[in-house]
Length: 554
Ligand code: GLN
Image 1: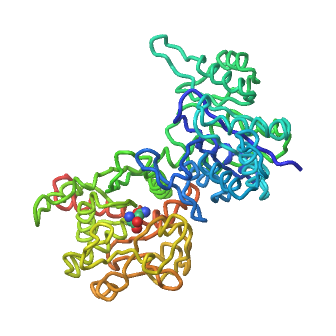
Image 2: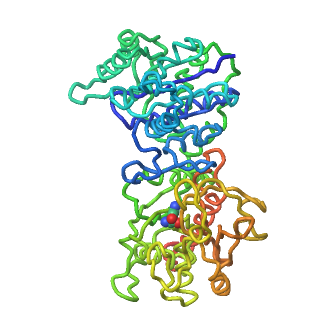
Image 3: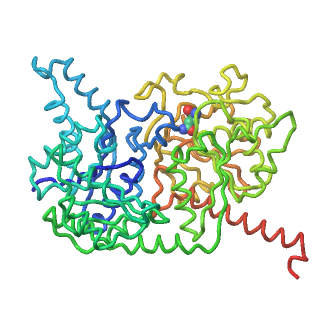
């Protein structure tokens, strides 16, 4: 049986949520018992987003095999069970790198190497590789917007796929915008018509139009779009704005997207079972209370830099029927103006939990250390992720163990006490990405620790990494003597993976990024427990306020 593909393209403007749309289609097909795989092509020339600034590109998502990928792969993993690896996200840069390598090796036997057929063949081979691992349907998202110069080879490749595999094995889904023009009090279809025409000019007739709009599309409107764009009326799908992204698959189901895709693909499948997603959305819209978390970091003004983190916290909150309120705090703003200055404390008073996420470089570190000190001393739940674990160790070394100049060699290469350092450089480990430790690593958990309890008593877990610096075990005796517990390490004990403070309501730092493995229907245990502890803190604080002001009861 031939492999089946859904190709997702975007038109009119970027940021319409193409990744989320592709992931939602994947979710719907999975809910009908099909096995899906998902991949994304990014038309830019960087070989991968690993070196791109979080301000420009948002988060770098990491897969188990250590690929640094586009954040849309995060949506795919959260909405489906597609097995993702470095094969599932390719950029123009990566494709050209592969071709040039072959050319230098003489693989092209003296031929002129050209965009068509060599680049397009490389793209098609990449799709075949992903679809060959047993998926019923492979969903391929083409990054960028139709009309971009860079997208052309990818669009040509999917055009050829349709030509080779036939209509019954390929569906073209095009995401567009139907803007509401306030002056005319009307929804406008012209940009969609133009975008569909642009696709047609390169030989692709869209089959299904996902129309982003801020209100319902009337029957007449759908008929008009269908007529102008040459699609069935029921293939004009209103992708209306929704308050929660978890509602998107439900909205698509209601518009019959999955049934239509299956019809076009000549594929039978059972009815969709979306009960868990319905329940999730229901809990999301009817929280019993709120939990308020401060995220103290560096890239906080651009929320896409912490996409998976925000998601994982949300999953934890929904699992407890809570509404998550995140306050992003720029770490630099928490720095002390003079020795002993604790004015930062007033900025942290109103939160139920504090989190320091991953990050690179020196800026803001002193502010993070202040936030961690506050959380440690005031018994406020603290969750440190990667950089947030490293800074927790530095704070503990400085303020509990008396090592005043404890630091990471990342922030002060000349420090006397490098509690955090580049261990891999010393070990002489060189891999892809230089000395970066990337992808899934096994971690052994100590019995009866906060970590092992959170993971349901597990003794071994696997989590994903993306960092260069590590805990320096030369300081282990001193820090554990002061009360820090190293509750997780790699099986060979080379790398310290988790630290915690026993007796504190929740003080945990992990060297890995647990946010990459949290899903809405399977919240990550460390986030869930952090939310539970933070909510307890909220209730305790509320009770204290009542105690302090008995009049409030009258
Ligand atoms: N900058 C730190 C390191 O390279 C932490 C990285 C991170 O938080 N992902 O080790």
